[in-house]
Length: 86
Image 1 (cartoon, rainbow, N blue to C red):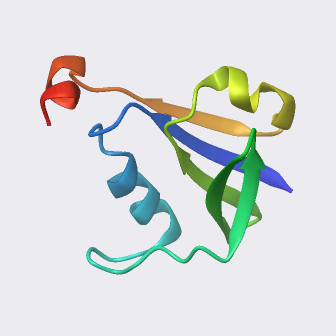
Image 2 (image 1 turned 120 degrees about the horizontal axis):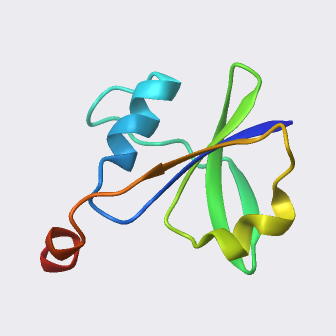
């Protein structure tokens, strides 16, 4: 199964982008029936249009063994100072 990974620092809009891609409205809960176990961290995903859509703040090094050339990664970043303050 191909993966679409939305990787980001906190407070950069990754939840908004994730919800937009999979069609979840604001205020709805994100289903957590399926998980990847990445070095002991359970990362939930939703299957949507042939992709496992994943939102994560984990570093790339943790994902490197789980990716292949068909997978897509979107990296979001924002103001690091604002991320720490909030």
